[in-house]
Figure 1 (tube, rainbow, N blue to C red):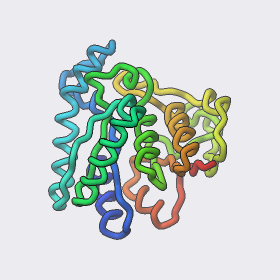
Figure 2 (spheres, rainbow, N blue to C red):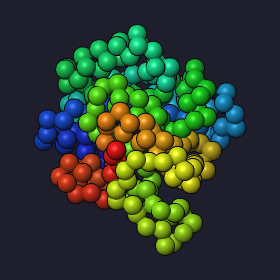
Figure 3 (tube, one colour):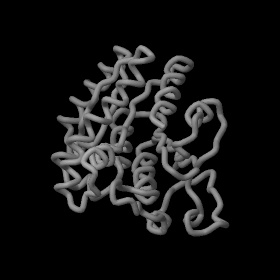
Length: 230
């Protein structure tokens, strides 16, 4: 629920000194629903993203501005965060927005990119943003309670792994990808992003995104997902 997520972010801003940058997905999903299609190729996904970006930001704006907070949209591709020139511009922009108490909402620029659409659900982008901004923690919210030893959708005896250090590629390869044609990613891309982030000194928390209190609980030391570190 988008409203629940927004309420938790506002709580963090009002009860802690943490600064929040939100990397969001769902533009393709929103656009697909608006068009009433299941996109079958990259062009259809890009078209859906063009429509979905507007819907997504309209919803975020509704919830944040109802509580008196301003938001800003920042559309990026992975290439933007590889180039030193662009990285500095992005850092300057994000820091300026944060200094004015504006919440940056970052999404992949799916209407012009193709690698991101076929790669993952903004997971790698969030890791690159975390590295660029020297963040202390990257939280990856998903439809699972965290990382399990086997696929919990197939194995009723799957158990949650509360802590992971030094993710191996072999471990990542065992994880399932997304099976939703309207979305991307899956746990595999989240672990690939976590590996990238932790190699840059950013700790990662993978947790259940549909919880009303998952972020607040984490701030208060209540851990329900998986913490990943080096």
